[in-house]
Length: 31
Image (cartoon, rainbow, N blue to C red; front, top):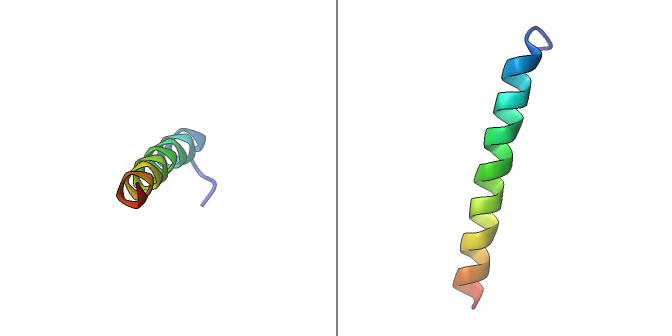
């Protein structure tokens, strides 16, 4: 699935934000 680099970047960017949010939530729950 290497047709559009733009969508790859957008998907990767969104994934990064979601993972960061999940990590922050985990840290908050741990504390």
